[in-house]
Image (cartoon, rainbow over all chains, first blue to last red; front, side, top):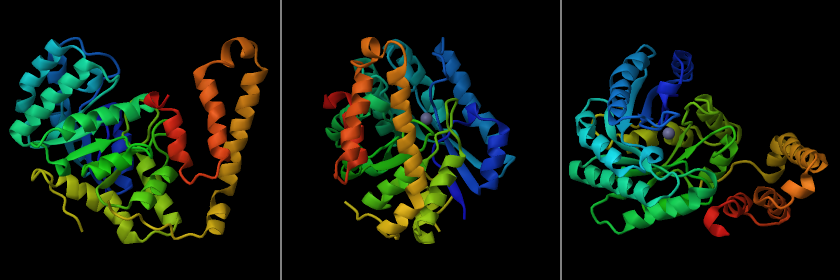
Amino acid sequence: MKIIEPHIHMIARTTQDYERMARMHCVACCEPAFWAGYDRTSPQAFHDYFTHITEFEPKRAAEYLIDHYAWICINPKEADDLAFSKEVISFMPEFLDRANVLGIGEIGLNKNTKNELETFLLQVDLAVKRDDMIWIHTPHLNDKKKGTRLLLDCLADRSDINPARVCFDHMEEHVIKDVLDAGYWASMTIYPQTKNSPSRVVDTIETYGKTRIMVDASGDWGPSDPATLHDALFEMRKRGHRQEDIIDIFYNNPCRFLGQNPKFRHKPE
Amino acid sequence: MSHGLKNPKSAKELLDMYYLQLRCNLLEAAASFDRIQKADGFAEEVKNDSRYQNLRKSLEILASSSKTRACDFLNLFSEDEK
Ligand SMILES: [Zn+2]
C-alpha cells in the first residue's frame, strides 16, 4: 500500500531517508516551515530557507519518486519579535503561490507568549485573505494543553475560518478530543521520547475513530525517524485492524485533507 | 463526534502481545527510581523537584483502575492543571 508522510523536515534529513521512505512506499511528503536549530539572524535567512524547501527539496525527493510539498510561515519559536515577523510575512505570498506549497504552517505557539499569539493571528489573517489552508504546531510537553486551548479559543471567535481546512498537529490523548469536537483535523506525531508512540497512536484511533485523523513522524534534527510512521501502521496490522482502515489513516486521510488544495495531486483510493 | 475503531483483539490476546514490553517498561521505571534515590544529593536536590514529584504521583495513576490513565498522566504533567 502507498502512504503519505504529512509532516517531515527533510532539510534536516539525509538522502538516505528519502531512499528509506521510498522503500516503505511513501509517495508524498509535506515539509512545514520550522525553526532551524538556531534563531535566524535576518528575515533574508527565511527567504533562503523558503527557497530551499520549495526548490531544492522537491528535486531531491523526485529522485525517489516522492512528491514533495511545503508549508510556508514564520514558526512560533522565532515569532516573538513582531517587527521581524512582519518583515518575513511580507514576502510569504511569493512562496505561497509556488507549485508545491499547500498553505501556511506550521504556525502556533511555543512558549505561549503574547507576541507569539500576535504573529500567529497575523498569519491566520493572511491565510483567510488568500483562502489558504493552515497547519498548526501545538507546544510540547507541559505547555501543550494550555497552548492548544489558547489556539482553539482564539480561532473559535472567528467566523472566517473553516475548521475543515485547518490541522492541529502533535496531538496527544489530553488535547485531541477538543480539537476534533471543534471540527478541525488532528495529526499525531510519533517520536521516540516526547509526543506519541506507535501503540498510543493506535489506542487513540481506537478511541476516536479515523475521521479527520492523520499520523506523522515529524522527522527533524532531534530524536525522530521517518520509520515510526510505518511502525504505527504495523502496530495496527498486528492488532488485526482491517486493511481498509489502515489505508484510510495512512493514505486516504492525508489525501482528503491535503487534497483540499488542488496543487496536491494524490487522490483517495 | 465519530465512533472509535474497535480493537479486534481480546484482553487476553493483548496481554499476551504486550506482556514482555510492559514488564520491561515498568522494571525500567523501578530501576530508574532506585538509581536516582541511591545517588548523592537525592534528599537535598531531587526529593522536592517538581519533575520528580510528578513522576511519583504518576505511579498512583498507573495503580488506579481509571480507563483514561494515559490522559490522566498527561494532564498531571500539564502546566495549567496545577
Ligand atoms: Zn515540525
